[in-house]
Length: 314
Image (cartoon, rainbow, N blue to C red; front, side, top):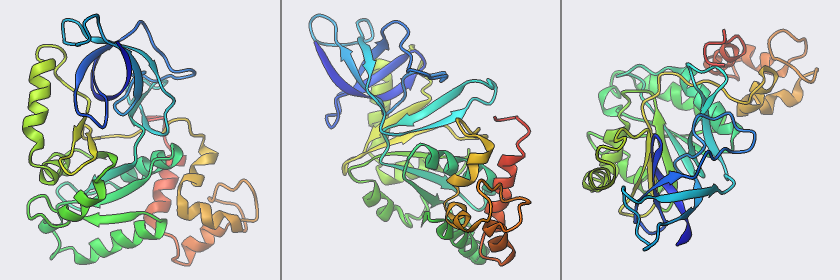
């Protein structure tokens, strides 16, 4: 039996598929060596991919007789990062996303703006809508109210929406839950920012469902999942991802980076020279805005860091 389904779990060489909007996960493996045309990715199939599959005779797939992935449909969008240890390879995090929620905190752990900005740039490059989720606000709102306001100013001026949440107190959780409704979303961010707790707060029923899928289909078969999609009880799907410690830029030349800072792209229309690196050229509208306090120095410093990258991630 042949059909079309969405990849809902990536566990090394094994996958789970579901014929969304039905939630009926079943195991699958790749047919031969499927590779996307022109791709240098370490994973040809990612969570969120829509694939054509064939089930074994009898019509039911299990770990002893998994379905076979025959082909991958063209992606509407995706998020990709450079493999930090493999300089010429990259890893597709997820595909066909309606929204990426980049979870961060100002403290506990302290925010790393260059890492956040790298993720935002990659979302811009590959056409993924993005919302910044400022989590754990209950832990520092009183002591860091001014810092929270500055954070909002920096990223809202750049054109991003910032939502405040606390998985512990429930602040902002209802609004975030409603925002996720009916969408395929990914939650990503630095290690320790509380992604998993936030996802559980959004839908407490997720734990038994996740456990059932893992134990029924993947026990003893690469049970360490890199990326996994969960169904939300109110409708929609969340992709959880491992905590990030680095995020390398992919398919991006240095002279292109400024195009993916929305506020710099708008300002660059006034630059005297095209192209302009916004570092030393006379008549640079971006530098003028920076000097006038109209452009965030934090975002500009992130941009300079990407330009001057020593090759660790690129």
